[in-house]
Length: 111
Image (cartoon, rainbow, N blue to C red):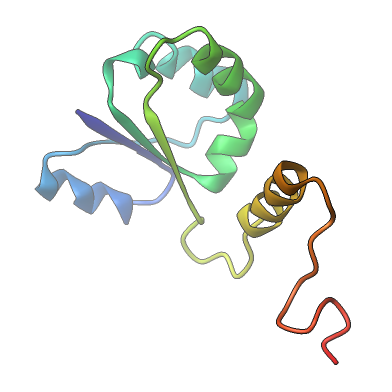
């Protein structure tokens, strides 16, 4: 089963695909209290970026204790022009490779 956690009603349309959608304005501790007993029941968790950021450390710690944690799908907030996920991916890839990667086709200078 898949669950979507969102602040906006846009992801609520996923209900048509059989995905449980929770629309909430809660963040941080209140959101975690609502989700912690149910997260392990799902195969995939779709969550908006700002909600994920508010429970990121708790979620990561919880997933470490699970043998098969759910797939985590972080989507940008509706209406936001920027996302920090690209920067996070850049950092993860740089760490995995062991060197600071250059950005762009010709490096960070754009020459």
